[in-house]
Image 1 (cartoon, rainbow, N blue to C red):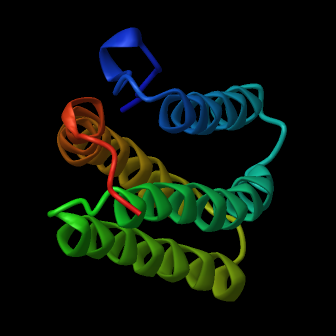
Image 2 (image 1 turned 30 degrees about the vertical axis):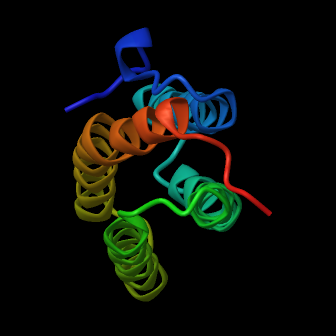
Length: 138
């Protein structure tokens, strides 16, 4: 299972799309390194990046939602919380068992399924709202 960035995944918001493109780029680099048998240790680099990504990207999205009074804010945040929890589980598994093929498969599956579902559904609704929304009054 591999997911690659295409313009079909663009939500139409420059900041959100740039963040999404970057995670796909990092993920692709990670898979290429694994395919070239560099080492499953590359998982550590991916986890370190994902921690940073989650903090930065989710904060940016949630800031946009709050600033624009997005009506689906709570539901969207729940998706973010669920992903953070799953990432923490994968990282704990990685730390306790070390790098192995099982963690690689679980990480791959989690990222592919979550990215596809979250971007194509949840983030598309947010971007449509941001495009159609009248700026909030101060």
